[in-house]
Length: 289
Image (cartoon, rainbow, N blue to C red; front, side, top):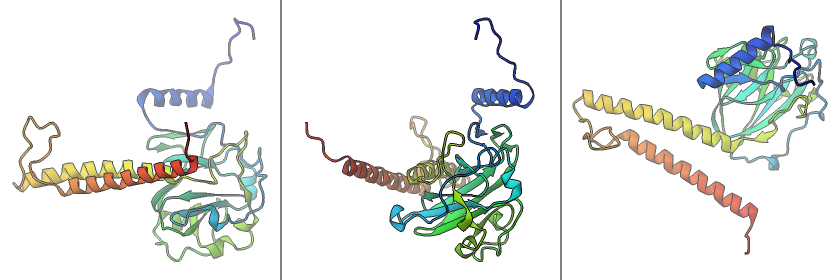
């Protein structure tokens, strides 16, 4: 390209997307986007192997396993861009037609969200161009869960253990039982959502450590908020006075219940870090210098 050549100007939606991205970066906002990952089934049909459960010895039974699947439909097969799947506000993959994948997650409450992109852009902070689902899913150790996504069909039967008012009991993304998932035309006829240059993803993986880190950060924020509320309540009841001005940590002059919980949570997380370090040492072996 000649040195004095002009690059083509961005117009319309690409220009808007670029502007929003720049605004988000400058303001520190959370930008939801899957640029370069949102290729739909029309442009890039899924080509992975046919569905099969992963072996039990390939995932830790102290955790939970979630299968995501999207049955074939003509509507989905003609899709130019595929929707994104988030777990705990982290993007993992875009969901093309006639596909399945899985994620090994830590037990507890996981937040599952799906957003439909427009030229890869999906939203910013609380604003979404098209929010398909955003719901909590409580998962137990050793259990397997099936999340079914379809815009044109509904499951054979609702999940019997799910409250009918739960967001995953209706809509395009629903939690279904293993029997429903194994029925003809469901997950058993889908193909593995492989990751490649046209549609990279980070699914079919264990995200336990990420979950543990996110849970710790979330819990500490909640506990710090609860601590401030406890201090204000005790002061209003005349049971606590503000800490002396020279005390750098501020707070209260009485022992707080939330301080006990904060210390317990920190200790539990330190144990997790110690276990990780021990596993890393065991896997790396001993070095002799």
